[in-house]
View 1 (cartoon, rainbow, N blue to C red):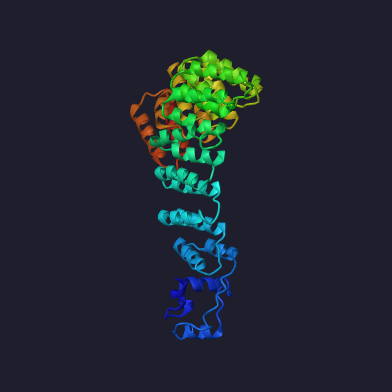
View 2: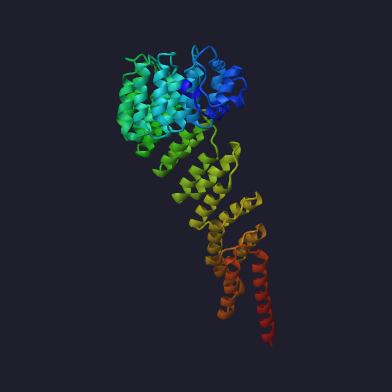
Length: 467
């Protein structure tokens, strides 16, 4: 190829490889003056002693040139041109760089051909195969991933645990390749490949997601027989799957086993268990677990508290939820918007409107918005029991905070405020409020002004009718 290139009838500098090489490093190619003149005149180089003397540079320079190319095919052409030069040997880095360039551009056939040429030249490192597996994984080619593992063995390249884990993780992402991955996992010892806790976690999670809980449990028990220590993630994977299968009692047993072995469960493990206990209406157990968390070295966070608050409110036990929210500050965790909304809604559902208003006042004082779902339920409740003044207080709190009441709220509260005896006037007022609230940029002052005008007119009309 190099001989054809040099004997081309066109100028040597017109070839993209030579032009690019000359641009990056002026002395990439050095010709004798007579040979350069012959090339410019479109004649072949002389076959006597005047043939071009090519100085192609060091392997490191070629590697940098290959790495600098955005076009992987041009990078490969540079690689091939350099390889034809006598006494030149590409570095391992050049092979590695070109293989990754071709693979990322989805030139898999070319990538595999360069990889095959690497085998007799250098011992191949597991890191290169790990990169290739990543490329095939991104391309959603699990068959290529599987083939790459056996190619590693052909290259006498024994993967380290981190590399085999990468391989397993990529392969089990495709459910149909779970079994081939498991076959390799079980045969790892025969190939002299070491496994670690993460290797087991990958396979346990894969079988859990595949609803093969019995195999996942078998692997878990196998870890102890092989002096492999499970970690917090191992336990969490199993507990999450048990909870999804509504086996919360078994998951709690696993938690006890975990604590007895000296592990400190992470926050996600506790979140999973609390969610499952609340959904199974085991609220007493959920509250006890919440109280135990700090003792066992894991401080409850806002997600844990809100999970239990929601559980109590769903079951019509908002007073127990009040106790939880009062416990939060003593444990260094402050209620957030979700905490208050859930609790106020739960109190309203049980008709405890005064307590709900107290918590809503506390909520607003801390800068949280009285959302429609909270304020509307509270206003409706007060209206239903005839506490119009309290309903107005809630409405005023919304307006002062900058929240425009919903049209349904206006429709509910306005007749009670005004002591309506004129349905047509009320209808006109509500229509004007509806028009204001439909506007994307609602101004609360406009709504308030509309209500004020109506009330003034109403008072004047009553005074005029007095004898």
